[in-house]
Amino acid sequence: MGKEFSANSLLGFIMKGAKPVIILILAIGGLILANLVSAQTIGITISPLTFELTANPGDTITNTLKVYNPTDSVISIKMEAEDFKPVGETGEVAVAPEEEITYSLKRWVKTTPTEFTLEPKDQKFVDFEISVPENAEPGGKYGSVLASITGTVGEGMTGAAVAQKVGALLLLTISGETKESLAIKDFTTPSSFFEYGPVLFSLRFENTGTVHVRPKGFVTITNWREKKVADLEFSQSNVLPGAIRKIETKWDKKWLFGKYTAMIVGSYGIDNLPISSEVLTFWVFPWRIILAILIVLILVLLFFYKTRKRWQLALRILIKGEQK
Image 1 (tube, rainbow, N blue to C red):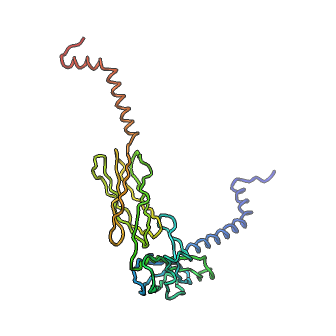
Image 2: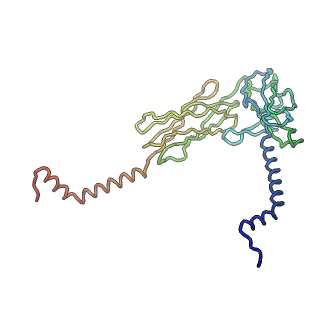
Image 3: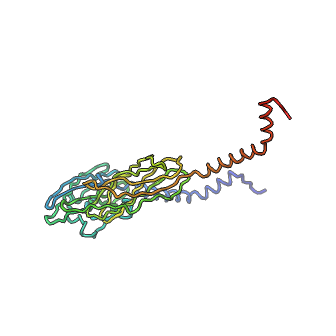
């Protein structure tokens, strides 16, 4: 008679044969996970993230930023200066080694020290100096001070690290005859008709001047009776020369009805120049709810119409106490 195997014994037999393979899979998985964790923990932070500065031709400006190592590894760091340019319309910037000379700042910037190492959980204060030439043209100059990881030494890893750069943005205005000019390129909502709120407003500002400006103000909303119902403050964000910046604000209210008018009220620049007024109109109409109410009303009216004779008879009985 052949040997019988139960389900448990069969599983045990399979697992016994597969044990070397399982151990190998777990070992490889552990190595991959360890490398992923190590890669995720390699990083540095820098603060503050933005410097807004003003200088005269011939001035020398000195400032300090902090570089911090939050990891468990010793990190080698190199400091350098680069120009940057805006990318897209939502505030992102990209390092631009050969940015247009009109707005270039990197050739005026020096850092001290330029290279150093940071122990785990340690920080370093780095000085940077901006030397403005005597013949510098008035207007905006834009650059960044970058901290780059050049190598790491930690548990189980030594050598070069994946290149990581973090930086602080430098927005410098050279005094003199500058041009501040900001226009609203677009003022829109996703639609001119809504069933419910909220309503999202998109403002696109275009800077045609020579210095960065920061618009500030409100989207003012009035209803069909010309009564103001909301003032929505939009965020104050820098718009660089030659760039377009999109800023959004939301009227976070669900139950609305009727025609509304929205208008931008605000200013920009050192002299608080007024932002050119832009107006748009939109409608909010909860048509499904209103349709349901109308259907119910029609059904009620039909019911009373169909039973009107009975209602008339009942009314006569109630008033006169008579019955036909």
